[in-house]
Structures are given as C-alpha cells and as structure tokens.
Image 1: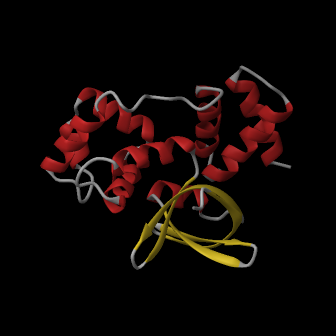
Image 2: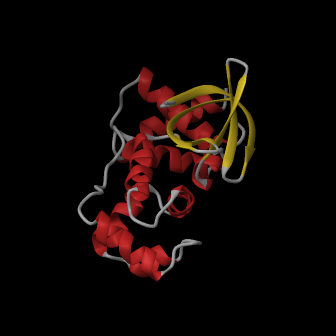
Length: 188
C-alpha cells in the first residue's frame, strides 16, 4: 500500500495530478482545492489513500492529514464512494465539513455536485460526532498571514511557503510581524 508520495509535479489537471517519484509517474486523483494549491509548484508531498480494485489500483492524494482523514470518514459512509468524497472535499474544507455535519446543514451539503438529499442525509447521520474542527499547528497565525499575502496578489503556494519559512526561522506570535518578514522574503 502506498501511504505517501513526494516528487516532481509533472501534470496538473482538474481532479488529478501526475507526480514523478524516481522516474515513475503516479496518477493521483485529488480535490479541486488541492489542484489549485499544487498548480505551478515543482515538487509536492501528498498523503495517499490507496484503493485496490479488481481492474487496478487507484491513488487518492491529499496535501494535509485533515483532508485524508475526512476522505476516509466520507468513504466509510454507505453509498459514498471516492468520487463523491472528492467532490465534497472540493467544495468544503475539512473544517467546513465538520461544521456542516455538526450543525446538520443539509442545504450546504446538497450544493455539492453529485450529492443528493438522501446521500447528504446519510452523511450527516453517519458522521455526526465523528468529525472535529481542527486547526493546523500555529492556529490562525499561519492562515491569516498567508491569506493576507494572497490578497496582496501572491499565489497560495508562494504565500504558504513564505509564511512557513518565516515561522521556521523566527517563531512569532504576531501576524503583522510574520507578514512583514514574509513580504521581505517574497520581494527579494
């Protein structure tokens, strides 16, 4: 079973990417959210859910542990396969999905392409109490700083890398300071 892939991004298409690891190109299905995050970068690390079928092996990749865990929970719901789970996670981040499930927001869930009322009701029923809203290490600081950089016109992956580099070198607890240092890195 493949649990993680790290390599050069060869091709990015809606819903899938090809990652070259040691000369082998792995076709990995992923969310539209992940595709947007991975577009334009040279290397990627993905956590993988491997699905073995009679006619082959399918790989589903996610840039974060939270997305992989949400995917695993979704496909455990009766009637929800990998394609529907990817569609749900394309329209809802794991924290948003946890919030939708906690509040029983059927309307928000049925806005996902491929998710009808019965499937949405099943997801809400079976995942109730099984998803928790989690924040990445560092809480809002990373997200707020990266969001500010994106609003200034930087790509999401550039913004996140700059913020991570700043926090690795200078642990800070002020968004303004992190933003200032990240801007210095990006404008060099």
